[in-house]
Length: 318
Image (cartoon, rainbow, N blue to C red; front, side):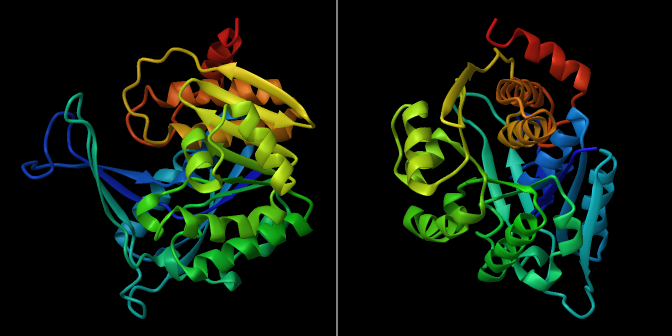
């Protein structure tokens, strides 16, 4: 069976009940959060095997992350850090408020000194990566530290050496970089090892200075960096350039409850379906359907079914 392997950090998201403020709340809902693990869950929900690779402290909070993700039927391969010998290594936390207009959502990150920031290239389980069909990661991982950037490079090289399709989402987080130019300098170093680049319209403009229409941006990015496949993803839908052919589909109408992990759901489902079927339009439909369904579920992990995905995908573009 097709296997997607994802490499990156996951932490815990602590959310106030809808409408309540963090400053006055007396209870928080706890969930695992991480772009790569979200994508791995989405891939698994489409029917392929999925593995998440990471580094966590061997603490109650680290085990909490793993327990939740294993509950979504993905394989977890974690480098455990001994909290007694490395007490500074911790699980990243993100505190969240969900609110309506005009207040809007609020996110308060607490992610300094996480175990994944201390990852080394020797921590990458090379045999697991070399056996994958598609290897996925995002720009959020090298943003953690220079060590994480080196480990990301090792991960992509191992995937390439093993014959996997390598997929990379820009996932630009402004608060984790000095500025967009710093992100561009680091992230473009990975581009020669990447087969499939995924980016939002906003990230393409901020990091790659490509602010035109999605089809034009995809062509320009592919021409400059030599990608086989470029996906430009936005609120209205997604555009894919593959083998010099452009496919575009609009997103289905969605009554959204929580869009936190929706782009990750799109990426994981798209990459899984493309690798399993080699059908770009089917992959695009599957990605957009999974993203839409993920927006209807509280939390960032896309707890959806293949039956739901196929039902929504069948109506896209009709």
